[in-house]
Length: 159
Figure (cartoon, rainbow, N blue to C red):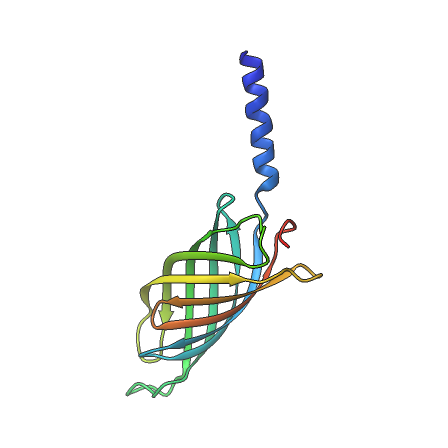
């Protein structure tokens, strides 16, 4: 009975290792609307943390689009995000994938020091192209309303 238990545990561990996708790169363009509006482009990686969760680490750089802060002429604007997303359909049984997430953002704005912000986001991911890229739209709140277009390398099992 002990041998059977070890064999079953080993086969389920192997099955889990085969179903967890590898880290996937992404490119993104974001519009941040609010008190400090900005346009940014960036890149990052989505790291699987199980079947249902992806940890995203993204960096973006761009320019502030609002009025300049007194004492500075810089329009540079940048951020780093750490976002955990929960996938509602991780095996992509539907044409579009939906995920919700939360995390932290560190944003450096003109005339201000970098400051941490809470981040909440909703993603809708489209079908994977023949080249293995899946487009996504992301709406979030973190330092203002965020609207993003994302191109992700999709897992092989995704549609």
